[in-house]
Image (tube, rainbow, N blue to C red; front, side, top):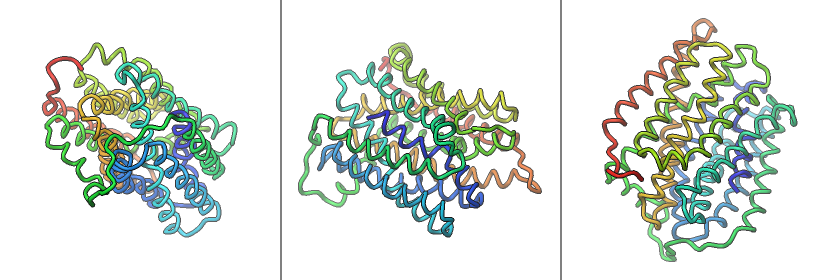
Length: 385
């Protein structure tokens, strides 16, 4: 399940900026198309999480999401191919995102609920999603030969249909808290916000949002920087991040038994800081090392956050907790990140020449501030968990 969903998302995500640029859409449109996923992450994950917690089984909800994602992904990439007006492209991207964005958080909740020991089993199983995403890069660059063509979007829609078929092979598990009479608060998943009353929960959720602001520059702008440096097949090169992510996930269960969660969180933030300092050097080798470090950064912070929710949140709230994490990370964090990093990129461009050194150094400075805040704010349990 993880492999198929990760592959479906990777096939169109990695080269989206290149495709839009190749079909004549400018930087502002690219930034706004990426922002649609952030807006969707603010709207849909809590509603989907509440459905999976209270009304329908996770696999049934995932089927609906996959069908909607496949349908509107086809429309979006067909519109790009036909060079429809930029406003229509942004609208289609937004509708697609409402279906696509909650899918991975729900898939995570679906998988975790079927594990006997999530702390030791989740890392190696979650690595299959990374392998699916990682395989997408070489498939786009070398099999579909579509770094700048829309065929990758249509291929992703086909993989979504495969994911829908696979859900029928999963053992049915009813929602943990069935509610047939639900209030608007239940329907909108608003009770998930009550988790922020706990000081450590609050730091993890807010930290995910803050950390994702500078990290939002990774996929939209790394590819553009590589192209300026004359790198071909940049989509395949981005798979370096997933290689290191897979290695990190395989080592995650070992790390969880030997280090406090706080040090794993801080290690992820520190990796993000080092990655952007390497980017600021502005050479192909340092960018390649930085891309590889992204996998470590992602695993140590975000996968640790998902394990944290599994251990510290009551079972009846876990789908909504994962949804709230998605909202804070992919919604609030990404929206501010895509818009803010887009503004910062324009500010670092002078007479058509991009000052990538200043751009990446500025983002590294933001991550340094987040590191200091998280280190002093998160307390954690006194024993290892």
